[in-house]
Image (cartoon, rainbow, N blue to C red; front, side, top):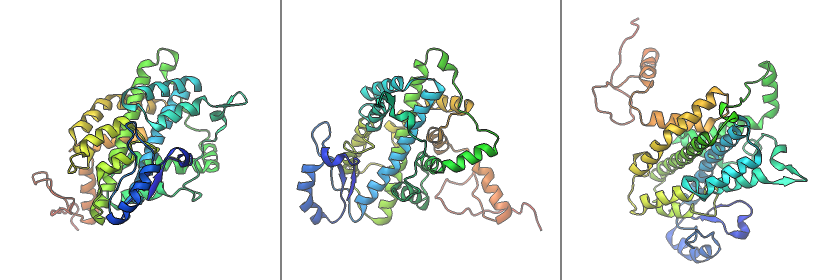
Length: 363
């Protein structure tokens, strides 16, 4: 059984994700419902995820989604802190307003973001002395993020919002190496102040809110696609409506607006798990796309560090496009390796090796 909520959940109730045989789950569920976190309607955030090891697997991918969301929010924090020259207390107020209404309402990570920015010790913001180093993946104390990325690659699922979040964690862990590389470059590529820092920043902060929401939603979509492929491989019969209920509250990826949408999608029990096929999800992402593009463009211009936000933008672009640069990529593969290719005149087909070869450079 996977358990989420951090160490404090032991007192206030965790989100729990059990999997296994039906008879065994039936015996355990009465107790689990009593101790589980409750959502805003009083429903326990525990349910039968599926057969076999599905409970542990779903919790593992929960952590992969969590990493994508955490990175996007951290990127937004740095944009406000350095790019817009906002104080920690001002950023806390922004996070609080995001958490009160709109797409980011009742998000656990946004809520604690406000707390983190406000917290002081002996008159000084605690955040101001925290090093920019996440070492849990490297020191072995946290494995689920690594396994999530491994599974995405193994199952051939593009999950860039999650994967880039993992890469920046890895880079951050080796702070001594970063200092050495900074010296080797004769300095670094400094995160610059945005022009909005000198004037009214309300519009850009609203765009930033929408960009963060897009990255959050994309993280859910990518994570669910990984789970879906593993479910098909292992025949776990995962109940996605149950998974959504497990994620409603008590867990790190708590995000009521998103789980409200997902609950509606999966309540019939036979929905397509790929959220980029769903009209409601695509409408939400399409509406956030201009803001995401704006933030990424400004971020690139000013050297802002935005791996998950920029990866989410690219994910949406290449996932919804039928004119990819891989057309040229495929030709290169055929040129030097006779890897074959499909023709544009043929049906899209399955992800299988093409049937055509051209002698680009006859011997």
